[in-house]
Length: 254
Image (cartoon, rainbow, N blue to C red):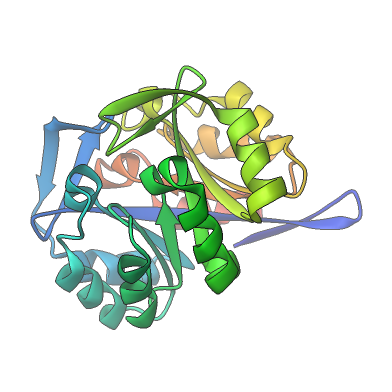
């Protein structure tokens, strides 16, 4: 984790390596498209161990089958990841009932990421936040300023900023993962302008996602100097060898 002093406070920033799961296997998608899938030979637990050894403090896991279908399909692989490492784990994808969320939390997962259900059922989200507080993270997946749901297959007319402001103010959501779908897996750099708009929401912790393809992209995020920017999720760039996790972890302390 990076720690820098910023205007009297400490800027905490971390690289979250991603493990996306389909059929119990590690995969990566381009722009969330299941038809543009790359499957990797390593077992999920082995990949998690490698990330921990490279200095990860938290691993981001997505059950893609769950995201598309609405039901968890990779629980055994997730449990194997949990058993393999001691670092924090956040899991998203198909968490649309309280039972699904609590199954993961009871299995030792540190944070659950709620996306589709956060948009469709505010009462559900509020109840979950009241029960589990900061262990509940909202996944905000955006395309051209509007939110998408159901594994990015359904676009909505819900604007990102008003929606997230409402969740912070009225529902008590403390943390959000903001993903720019158009940049996910494309190595075109993060959408800094859109990210800054999200970061302007008072008191909301933000994890960036989508577009990182180089060390300079991480430097660009650090240059924003936003104390509520908690970190960035990096996936395909790690798998393709475009960036090295150890190097990324060292950048902000240089």
